[in-house]
Figure 1 (tube, rainbow, N blue to C red):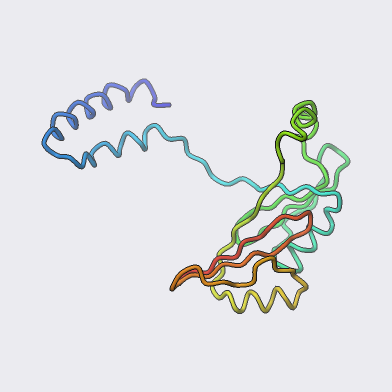
Figure 2: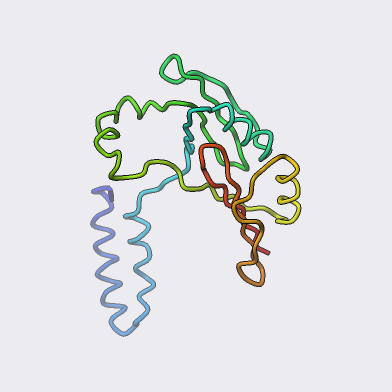
Length: 171
């Protein structure tokens, strides 16, 4: 939302831009409106849940090289871990606070929608090195490294609970 105190200024700029751009077909001056209206989002965490969260923890720390940031309890009794994987915070547990809040909605939606995470995408500097290291650590590749263009490669690793990890190399 645009604060009320800025509305007059924005309206004035909009009118000035409209009249000034009557002969200019690019209208690049309107970009300030997009910025003023768009919400700002930053990553907080990606939450992975599964029946065997210890397997997820092992995969994202031992196999993928993530760093364990903290171990804690969710809802007072569910063990959870935060793992930093290349700047992406991955929360791992067998339960989420949302499970309790959305229990009715989840139950109604089963069979209509598939809940879950499709994949995490991670950039790597060297695909061949990443592939060799992950294979040595026991990773299973759904798609081994494949060129997607003259300067890019992609691969998909299968993580526990059938979450895919996409590896991307761009040079």
